[in-house]
Length: 419
Length: 88
Image (tube, rainbow over all chains, first blue to last red; front, side, top):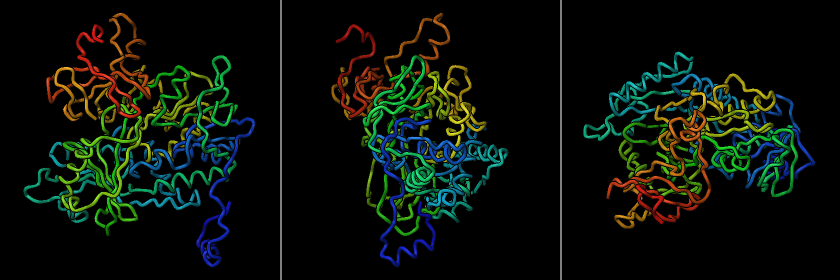
């Protein structure tokens, strides 16, 4: 692999930028593999990378239906944070945030991680108390959290609506200063390049249509490019997890929903942190390095695989945005799109073995998938390599719904469209 | 997305709220834990036609069973949830 560095950039620049190699090999399937990972999104790619790097398992194929970067990893709003309340989530997402902070150096690829701070805004007294409680919970777990009074908030986020007539007056914000954003495409490309360099075969345009089976065991996958036998088959197909699992008669505690996202025309710096607002409305926004404001809100609320949403939610998101950031009203929208959310029954993910032998599952990411990418791959790789979960994902069990060990961060019960 | 309410005619989707999969049925009280776990938590989650509960809160305030294609949001039918087995 060509190492990227300032020197290599300067040399290639002098040579007219000829001689750059493709970032990853275009592989064709070998006869068989130790591990096949289904799904070339962020989580699948991270899993492939950590399998090779942490566990020395390099006879691995990663099969992707489309192309790398074409699924949900290229459709999210790039927010990275670890401000959770429940311990099972706190430690997992905090490990993810630690991996984010060193990811560019680790992959030798600039994922453009920017620790610009992630803030949750309070627009009611109750909301402020709930956020302070969350912050205290985080600090007890050793995670950074600071409470900002309205005056502190105004100093670093002056463009919010602080007027007397504001429909949603600001009561302060909980800030996690180590949170921020990363360039989502770069995350996919960086993991793909690093995994490929360690020997993983990345096979694009290779949809999995069924499984190879011997009795109760899975022995590989049947793909558009023919059968690929493998010792272990690992599903990292969040968004569409139920479809492949269903071919094995496995019903999952998951519904596929649809989340819309938006980006405005490019502007000079105006939103300096990641702002999130939940409670009376739901809205989150950050500014990309190109200057576009990237924002979103609630999921549409009904099961969907369509990757496009409906207008009532567009209106709802924009209303939420205008309520706290009135200046948004002067902007033009550049793009709007939809992605699939694996909404689980308690709002938390699943990284586990399954009742089918040699089959492993990584699913149920709800809204939280992007920020989890490194830790998800790290933990899934451990689970696959050791045939047992790591302590960090031991709670993300598939059978927790039967045993009652739910991780319901919002406390809304088995109603996926409310998580 | 517009939903053809059997009582009110075709109305915009924002008049309705969504509950979810209408194919799951509450098991008998003595059916055992596994049956209740399946009822509460496990879903087919199909990419295709799905019968689902919608509530017409902005109209006749009836619970409906709407059959909708989850791949493209096409509505394939809508009936009143009450006594739906007897309806076409």
